[in-house]
Image (cartoon, rainbow, N blue to C red; front, side, top):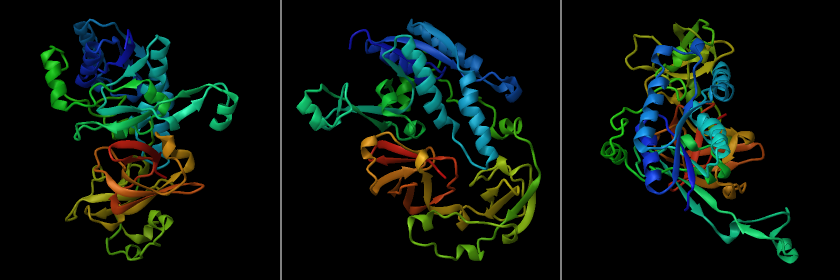
Amino acid sequence: MQNKRVIVGLSGGVDSSVAAYLLQQQGYEVIGLFMKNWHDDSLTLSDDCPWLEDSNDAMLVAEKLGIPFQTVDLSKQYKERIVDNMFAEYQRGRTPNPDVLCNREIKFDVFLDIALSLGADYVATGHYCRKETVTSAGSATLLAKNVPRSAALVEGTELVEVPTYKLLAGADANKDQSYFLCQLSQAQLAKTLFPIGGLQKKEVRNIAAEQGLVTAEKRDSQGLCFVGKVSLPDFLQQKLATKKGDIIQVPASHPIYAQTPENTPAGLAKKFAYTAADGKIVGTHNGAHFFTVGQRKGLAVGGTKEPLFVLATDVQKNYIYVGEGKDHPGLYRTALWIDQADVHWIRPDFEKGQRLAVQARIRYRQPLSSAILHPTAAGMYLVFYAPQLAIAAGQFAAWYLDNELIGSGVIG
């Protein structure tokens, strides 16, 4: 490695700060860039948005390390690619994950393009995950001609070994952030470094303290990836109109739960179809599109022994269906469906159209569960061995082989 240039996304947090330091120690030419992702005061409680503080902390870290630093304004791209999509998804009664989209569309796309235009060989972030490079004869691809390998050998076409990149879980199981990167591609991984992926969080803080970095004791950021400390309900209500509707409680003893689903992927993935006649009205809400499956907070309905949880929403009729207790049968399903257009393989060499036993999760920090992928011409079923809590349309399911994240998809 000689004079390789790396542009680090300095967020003003301890993780990216230590990432920059470690790369500098490894001999890279390091440049720090802070991404300004949001400044629309019409949709933000501006007093609670910490980007100015974060930008200042990022600048102080760069000064301490003696590396160049600048801020790039990506707010236009954020609005177009992330925020507008998020509002549209909630309006449809779906639950998007802006953090996953933020990585796919902004940090490892727009930001990566900016870094490459500045002569960078790589970009780096403070994510707790790891990248491994594998090169084998099976990964050889053709240059100049799109012809079979056998024909190329006959014609003498030049062959090059193209590495395959593995996205591995972070060494710190409590901080593993591979799920948030489940939509990355081989091309994006080729240009990305994860310097702290092999460390524990405590080690990262210790390094920051030893180097006198201002972020050493800074708390991890909370809230939306682009808005900061603003709560999601407050943010949504600044854009989506309120609309009063009924909260309908469905009893756990309802006959719909006594029906044994067809023992096929399609049967197991079938959602419960509720109507207003399936329960009793127990309260009102300000808009079904503000709620998601599994949600407990914000219902403001009392008088039950156990808390109420959202079982389903109907944004057309503006109903919210709820059930009492976390063990309510309406909260669980064994399988889910992903449209073909929403299936993504980080490792395309696993995309063989055959059933595949994997470990999978449907949300960040959820323990991995054993499952089987069932591909079809129209998409894919992900069937779990154990029922899963609160499968929400619009979220991402991610699947692994051992510690390697190999693919993901948007839940339908």
